Length: 191
Image 1 (cartoon, rainbow, N blue to C red):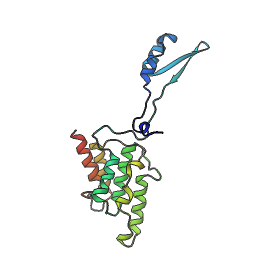
Image 2: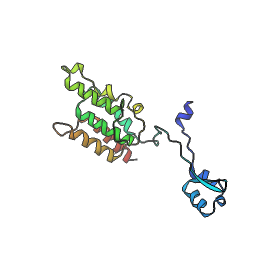
Image 3: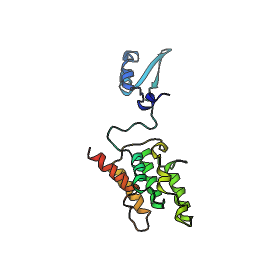
Image 4: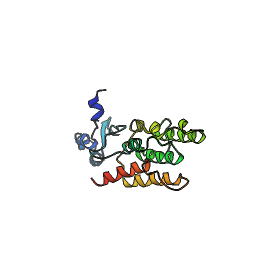
């Protein structure tokens, strides 16, 4: 696969392809199906419905000028990369991953799973030198997410709430994960 194919995904437009099929083959139902993106074919006097499906791209490029949740997670490395991962950070990273991917479960080997493991290990570590940092967990976060989306205000609220609920003082780290997602959402909203 070349780089051009990765950067510019191709998709099949269902309605455009359906317009190419004559609607008279199946009568009025075929015309209705044509509008819905269903192509009917006549085989032996009976029509069989066949739905065209679009090609799905795993991690589509975000629209120009917007900051994605994955990029916001990577930005947290620049602002708070030396901070040891705590439970509140792991919860914020999990909330960010859920919002970016649309999945409700944690993916094994994903960013959230790594953050939870790091928080568990850090809670047991004797010295700060042995602790895993946000930089260790969040470097390359965009590549670890199967899909990504631009950060919104709702995403920032969810990530901030998760970080606050899991902090013993009910606060967020000033330059941490929630702050990075909130900054990305503010920038996206102003565009």
